[in-house]
Image 1 (cartoon, helix red, strand yellow):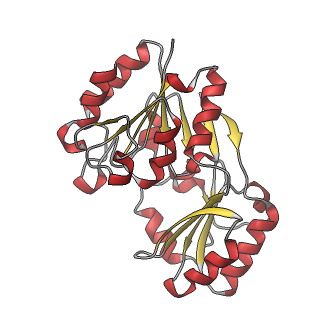
Image 2 (image 1 turned 90 degrees about the vertical axis):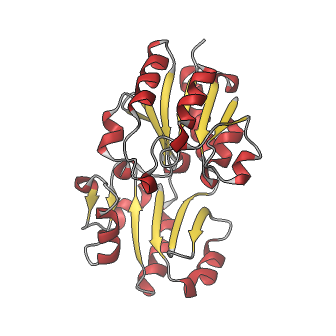
Length: 260
């Protein structure tokens, strides 16, 4: 029976803060071996398609669970998209515009970022994104298909903004860098995994996930076997089926060799 393997990116497949921005060759070789045996390999990321760099999309993964589960692609085609809703997006945008806050709207292919939002432009240009998938001139016509928003939210607005969106969305907020992400209330990476398994007509017991961060918690819980990197956060290790070594100590390769 085929298995499906889901991989977080930074801290699991690569380690950008250690200068490792490519998957180690030995891991690539092992992944190819696993796939040749009839298994399926997926990237599971909080990023939307426009922010998944070309290096990853050029590799031989079967698909992507993106935007924290709001968008699933299998073998080049979208099988699931979950939208925030026209009225919800319009309400949030109206608030942000009235407070002169920078933001980017994201659908299943493009990011919508106004030209005057120079701070976010500079930030995303450093993130190795697909710049040809960023659109600077747009209007309300795109609101109905938005699956995620990223906002540069000043700390003094955080409490007020959270109160406004409470109950309407899931969100992540890092007050240290004023980074705020909004995605669907009922969607996580776990739902994206469920859609993928249903596509292949496979069971939860046929799935593995590999991660290291807080946004991997639902994913690790959702699969048959959740593997956490040694460099992962403690909360994730507590729910893991298996904790491997740190990324820099070949933790991912060791885990893949153990199970496959």
